[in-house]
Image 1 (cartoon, rainbow, N blue to C red):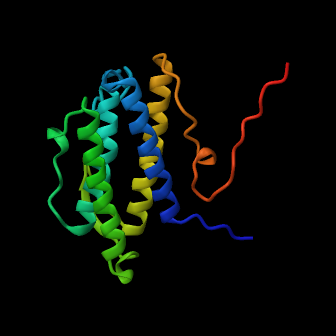
Image 2 (tube, rainbow, N blue to C red):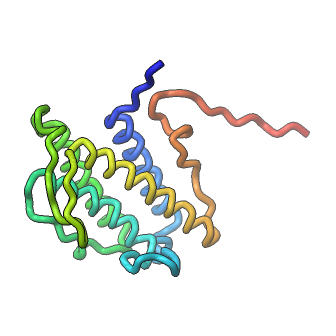
Length: 176
């Protein structure tokens, strides 16, 4: 038996995650964006806002790399402003969507080479796109853990609870 999960499914899931997080952040305020990302990081991210900006920045910069454009500098996007962050996320997602629609089919399996921090990376656009979406999913889970450890109750963000690929979740009432 073969089961296929498509890039479109991962995009739909991450779109849902973004909407869910944006609504949750509006409910709790931008103070959440200032929560520490933790003391044992690699020094790139000090706050939840830094992580959110990084999710969108990584998406934007991977598209820049695949398309051969200069890398976007996200430093001007405030890490403590919900609207600015998610507007940047809309821009990064628009770029990814355009890449998916316009990159010729023959190029999806042709490796591109680029510098990433202190390494030279050579991989296919297909792998880069999947990585970008998985990278986002991983960081949203990290953010969920950080805010929970700081006393904020979150939503169910698991793929199972998303509307992607259908299904239904009903809560049963507690019996006395």
